[in-house]
Image (cartoon, one colour):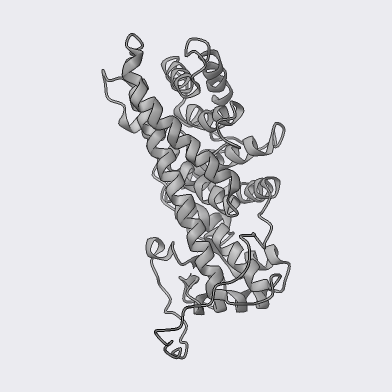
Length: 360
């Protein structure tokens, strides 16, 4: 893989596409009411993707299940899952600011992110201020100097946010697609820009899809008071993706029995789907994730609804796009993830990796 800077005109088309795509994503993320929910989902997807380019296959839905504190069986490669969780911890720590991460907590991710960010900043001058070009140059320089891939990937979103191309670090912008596109002897910058454009386009598509899905779920709930608990439950399901009664009860500050009733009501409305057949540790997933996780439990039986007149239009809710349930703050999410990681330390030690390093 080489850097072709002799003909900068050849980089104009991919640079234009990537800049436009990142700009659209940044604009969409800045004003959407589902940003926190989308970020939560994106972190799981990004962590799984970064772990994958290091040869560690991780199911993002398994990460969501662990974050929801649902008991799961140990996987064959538990170290890969812990690596992905630690990647998420690094993302959350970056969002929370310096000092948010406990220095005493074992790290599985190589600490090369700061070095990669520095190299990207140093590349701004030779790139004539073109942020995405500098990002690709710094990424390449970091890898060429023997730096780890995960550090470079985590640096991308942080660098773009620091240069005010995005309102905050967006996990889907991580350069993973660029590494997959890169070919020996090919043009690294063209591959990097193409990968960034594709990630930004897919990120915008998933963000818009989640927004439309959330609005549709709200309409299914019907015309209830705006502070109704079920509306907050819809927001929690949209954000978590995978959730259990205990987790929902903690978010809504209600009894577990009340949370169970809410989840069963959301299942009746086809907003959530239960994927377990047991009385305890029940797991519900958002309706859009059910096909990926596999629907295990049968849907709750409900009486058939009367057929609506073909002339009648469904009533529209006269409400603004407002997130009823305050999104879990980054600090709270980071603290929750730290607790999860510490509980898994005995399992991790069984694999001989008590805070060990991974290969970049």
